[in-house]
Image 1 (spheres, each protein chain N blue to C red):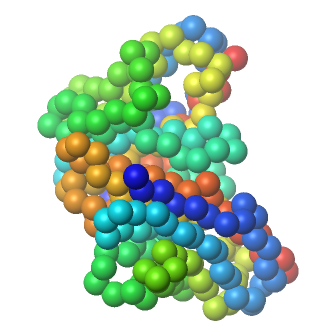
Image 2: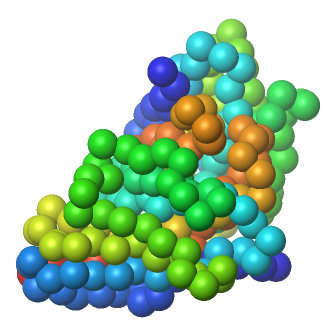
Length: 115
Length: 115
């Protein structure tokens, strides 16, 4: 069975500091991984996806994530946090059911950005 | 950019009443999903729908739940007799293809409050 684990329910950084949000996955097959962001009172917006083409994936808003098979990780980073990055971030893995895929989400990490 | 739209944004209902949550998926998408997020918990898969029938459903999706695509554009989730524990944020999603690298596009959600 596939799963993702996000370490840290809350991460607080200063504006301009590095953002690092952790995600580890468990999968018996090559995983397809996603990061979604949820701004207050909004839905889930795709930040980026890993589909095996490249281990370093660039997404929107300056975020990127690196797939590391040896560490079963897909951590999300941004070099310099902006106040507008404050949101909840979800890591997800695509899991096959009998006839289609579903997303299995981590428990989310709330990013707080201090001025 | 095309969006998934959900209505209403907030629904308050008395326990035992029926509720219908509505979604308009992206127009050329073929696969539709409902997820829910109970406050403070993970986003969980409920059901997937393709070609006018349910493809997969989770153990949460019991006989009280049903989905329908009544008119070729709307995709609805009905809860027949709501319980307190149905209070959650419900997200609709759609995707063009049922392949693992296809991200699912989410609406802004409907917050369902059962009194």
